[in-house]
Length: 598
Image 1 (cartoon, helix red, strand yellow):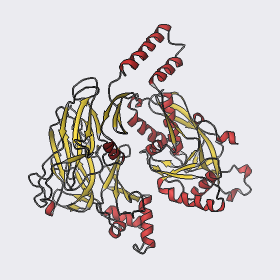
Image 2 (cartoon, one colour; image 1 turned 60 degrees about the vertical axis):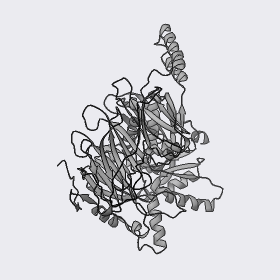
Image 3 (cartoon, helix red, strand yellow; image 1 turned 30 degrees about the horizontal axis):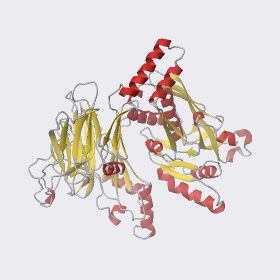
């Protein structure tokens, strides 16, 4: 039994399941209880596929009629692979997902997170990627998975049984959906009271990428370039002639002496005090010293994606654009551009802009800092543009700037009376010739979280405003849409100073997007932000409203202290969705609408 528990990662992982026992072991088939168990799960790739990934599975889940156990996990893993390894797009595979006890029917889809993790690692191994990922042997996983990568709750009636099963196994860590972390910890603590020598760490996972970022749950191996080439040559030893081997060895020596042949940047990482630029194979192209303060700022999420790539010189490789600091304050108040490996910059643009707020004379400093960066031909004119989200230091205005990446000149400027902190997202909401720009944050003029949707070709002007927050010398922008989100009872009783849209998550396949807003302020002893997640259609109608674990914990605390009469429930959240307000061009409406492009 212990040998089975300690199988190597290449053979899969163990997952927690709630099983229906076969009829031959049931004493009372009509009232047979469900039992918790551990099953060995593996994903094995058999070869390439043409049009889509094809995974056969040797088990079924109760309540899964009409869809496969693998649809959600494979879609989520493919989405992440496409983002991190662009060369793998379109390289589909055929394989099998196997449970070692396939004759037992599984109750639900709690193995989805594990299937996605194993599929992700199997694709990297099959593609001979230099980066390998595996679930740590001491870890158990449970969680459903949406195609966009969100880890969804498992059945509440089965979770305590799974925690109990994990507690009495040799495994020491259990990953559960983030909203169910507290419930799982509560059951673990009950078991610890009776069995104090037990050991089980509960870790909440919100999204699939979070599983791979958490070194407590997964391990990553980066294969050296020379070793990688040697392995590829060995794999093909029967097909490669002696002369080809010699040429391969010469290529290895040349690469070690002169650097990688692929000089096209594909990703960038902030580590220590440097910005490390890598190609699609993970080979380091360049390391730029940017300072520890700036790296810490990126790690804390105060600047989202402050790096972009675009080919502006019509060469073979893209150029690099990033936010830098002019001094030691790590404000990221300079935008820089260069070709990878070049000794000099293409250009440098200090982020200093005059914005006139006649009713707020204290806003005098012209200094702004990068809060997000992206590049692409979003207006479909055949040339890429560079977009930067910049927040004022230290006051409220934000700017969404469209730069000419050739020289750093500003083509269009959108001013907002408050900070925009969501970063820049794009989505084709209106079905037009070009995607829209989406930015979110807080409006000082209205005191609400807001979401702005803009046309890249017609984004100049300012956001809706009022009173002292009027913008001088600029016209109102022609928004595709502009939304204000209301407050829940938690925000009204324990208000955050600046409730805002922190994240925007487009899901093109489902034609929805999630607006994640901070709602309420937690005490100092808490961690995290209480959040309300509003799912909107691409027509911006509210589909659903939910809350995260921090919000629920704060609401329960306020209820226990008598500050709240009741924790906001489904009906309260439904009314919340009905109170979202939409800008009409001259006023506000509760009817979902696009104010232009109709």
